[in-house]
Length: 352
Ligand SMILES: [Fe+2]
View 1 (cartoon, protein in one colour):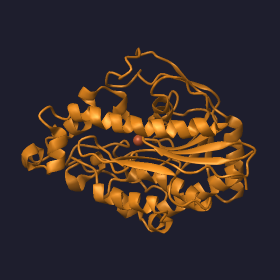
View 2 (spheres, helix red, strand yellow):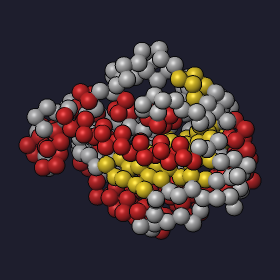
View 3 (cartoon, protein in one colour):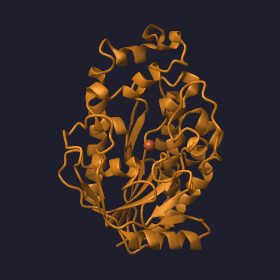
View 4 (cartoon, protein in one colour):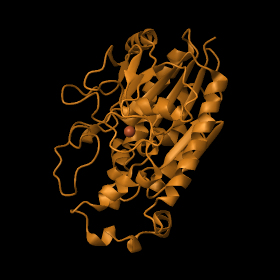
C-alpha cells in the first residue's frame, strides 16, 4: 500500500572526517587575508563560540557535536527501518558538482540505475571510518520511479528536468551520497534505493562562488537566483501528493544543514545565523507552514540558509499531507562547526 514518510537530516561533509578536522571550515575562514585581524581573535567572539572553540580549537567539542548528530541519525534510521520503504526520494543541493556551466536546472529528477560511488577518492580529509581511498559503495537506483514522478510533475505543470546518467560527477553529489553514508554510519548495510532530486539551492552563487565561497574582497559575478522558497513548497507538495497516490511505499528526505557560516558574510563567515534558524525551527515544531511560506529568497540569502531550500520542499510536503508538527525533531546548534543541523520525522501518511 502506498504510504509516505517524511524525514529531515544533515549531510554535513565534515562529519565524515575525524574530530581534529571537524572545524576545518572555520580554520580556513580564519586564514582569509581579507578578514580583519580583530574578527579572527577568539577573545572578541561571543561566549558560546569561545566555549566551543575551547583551548584546543574545537577538537574536544567536535566529539560532542558528533555525538549529537549520531543521535539524530539513530532516530531517523529507526523511523526508516520501521517504515521500510520501497525507495527514498532525496531532496539535496548540487554544489557545483554534477551541474556546472553547461546547465543549471532549477531542480531535476535523476532517474538513475544502480551506481558505484567512491566517496573518498577526492575527499580532502581522512575519513572517520578509516576506509581506503578506493572504497566503493553501491547506491541503488529506481529509474522507473524517477521516470514516473517526472511524468506526473510535468503533467502537473512543474517543468522538471530529468536525467538518466550523471553529467559532470562520477556518481552522485555529496548531498545524496552522504545521505546514504550517514544513515548507515555504523555500516550495518543500506538496502533502500535512492531517487535523487537535486535543487539549485546555491542560486546566485552556484557558479559565481562554485557553490561554496570565495575569499573576502572577491567580486562575484552573480548568477540568476534559486527557485523561490514558496515555489519549492508547492513542488514539495506536488511530489508528496503524487507519491502518496503511487504504487510505492516512499520515504522522502530533505538532506541538508540549515544556515551555513561560510554564506554569512554579515558575521565574517565565522558562525551561522542562529536566530534565523531558530525562528524557522520554532515554526516547524508548531506546524506553522505559513511562516515558512512567507520567507523570501532575499531573507534566505541574508541568513546563509541557501541549503535550507531542501527543507522548504519538505515543509510543502508536510502541508500538502495535512501534517502538523513532526512526531520527533531536534535542533543542534553550533558556532564552530559551520552549520546548525536539524533532524525530524513525521508520522507516516497512508494512501490517498
Ligand atoms: Fe550541501
